[in-house]
Length: 192
Image (cartoon, rainbow, N blue to C red; front, top):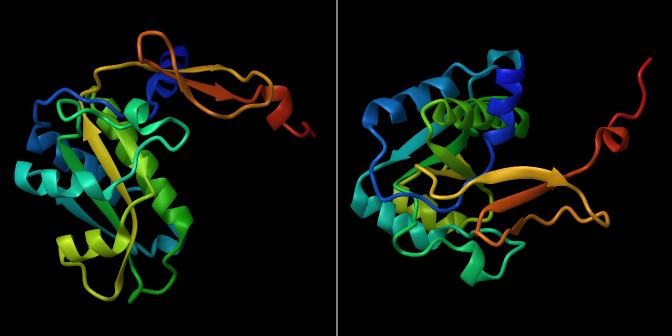
């Protein structure tokens, strides 16, 4: 059990990456994890676009926004730290029951599958949806839910105790991410 908890403690958001590609077989496994994720009434309304060619990855870079709690010079990856792979998560609105819960389950499965290979990820909801829809050639019935950036991280990201009620993540002196979390006694309402 401790091994699983350690896996979950380190499966954080990563925003700076080595510039080595993620093997296509790993990308396929990440997508397979999303495909088989639980979903309400087994509706399976999610569709994905794998962006792995260097040219397309470069076109995606300016369309995603990084680390809202940090100044751009700290939160945005430098040109030699950008992700090497993106996956766009779309909801097929021609199918009944598309919802955010199913997307959340798929995102959790994808990021866990990636981290099992040492591939870090960043789920991004602050994105230029119209521009990405156009770039990826998404049809009218596909609603872009989010984009996930992937790569081998060049920093660590760790959970730290919350101070002064602030949820804002920050960088330590080595540019590693520190992510404050509320203590259990604040989130567990009651045990019955």
